[in-house]
Image (cartoon, rainbow, N blue to C red; front, side):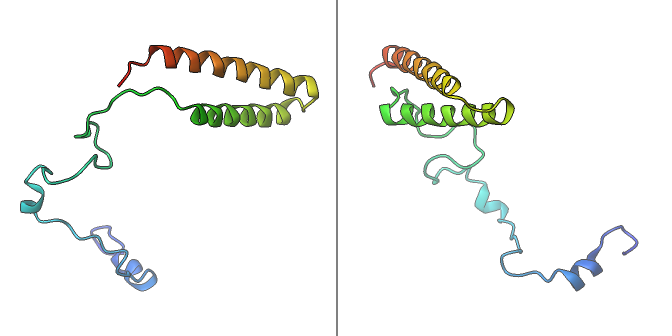
Length: 113
């Protein structure tokens, strides 16, 4: 270990760098244009340049979320209390009813775009 606390000798001896490990910094002039020629949102940006418009949920997306919720709840219930037909029916009914209500509310309240 060197006097400044860096561990360059260890890294040089035990971790040879490959081309994928080297990160080159961009020149300041390349980033000074504020990204005007970029298309779409950049990873990590809070406000994309593209306008976000509300849309009604698609039925297949809603069913996918409901199925995922059912499976997650049933998996957790199985680890805690074990599964029985009444519990499975109750979970499926509760998730189905909640999904139907949420889907109906979102479809009715989403403006037409």
